[in-house]
Length: 505
Figure: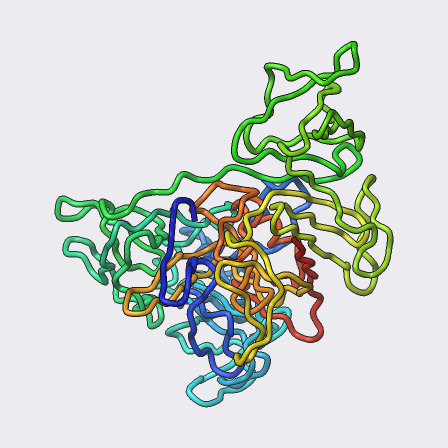
């Protein structure tokens, strides 16, 4: 995080890569359980530029018949039976079988809904009165308190007013805590008796430099309060709003191709070739976070190397640029990488063969459809660099603090938002609230949006791969496993496709 130093007994740690632990029954999420947000996502792979958004799947209860309509019209409009299940809690688990402790494969969140496979329940088990099969797979316990079949449920309608904007790169408004206490009730604010599981009671005290996510403001008692994502209250004067990051990467195709250069930290000068075939600095610059295509031509001048750009023959000093191009000539399946042309059509059968190349120290990412790069951007990896995970006494290999793990991995879990927590000895935890578009690939490490900084290209994180919110949203919808319509999170099964990550220095 920009300007943040985190000190702990065993080293420097960063929020955003050590999620909380919360048992969800058999197969509990080893990467931690989110303090999740309050609406269903619109899940589908966007085909447009990274700023484009997938269409939202709005939860709109069915309309009542118009006043004076004949009974027959009302009967024709009435459904034959329930068609969807609606979430009234932050985590409504989707299980692999109709049993309370069956493996979780996803969940719904507040206000989200998913289509039923049948209006008839599959069975009841344990404390669950009825499990229903849902699309495209899995079972949800419907108990009326955490989940309902009634789209007109009054509490469900109330919760929808606090839904996040899942069609936006940032589903919530976000800010930095100045040190505060979250309240369950505020005198003068009429809040209902929420269903079980709404409030996240683990961290009532929010230490300075942690973050807060909220949906709206409300006035009461001469003060302004923020209605936080878990429907607790936060004093507005104890929160410093973040400036939204607007940086975004670039889609690649016939007109935009690798190699290309990004510019980090500060503006960089443009050079031109003189009549004497010498390189001369001009008054023009590429601004910080600008990008430009490269021709592939280079020129040495003493100890310096210059690269020719596609910007009207201008040149750039190589050390001023973040040069993005594949590190190897072949993809993980042995096919030669093609730098030009359209992405291949999805295969009629079998996996899409999506993969992501990440240069942790150089600070860039390329997304590929099989042998074609389709997207490139700047990222922020670990501020202490990158290293190979080492075996230790722990159940899995470990990486030094604030270091990104090198190697090959697969995306195995995805959350529309996920609250990340770093425990500290003898101190309150660091919290990053509702981190959007989180994708887990190894141990405590994720790809995710970072709303708290704008330092793209430089090492900034606690080991995770930070993306701008726009880029993170696009990548979330593009990668496998896909998140089914209405789901808020998904966990990969052996039958699911999974995007591969190749992380090198």
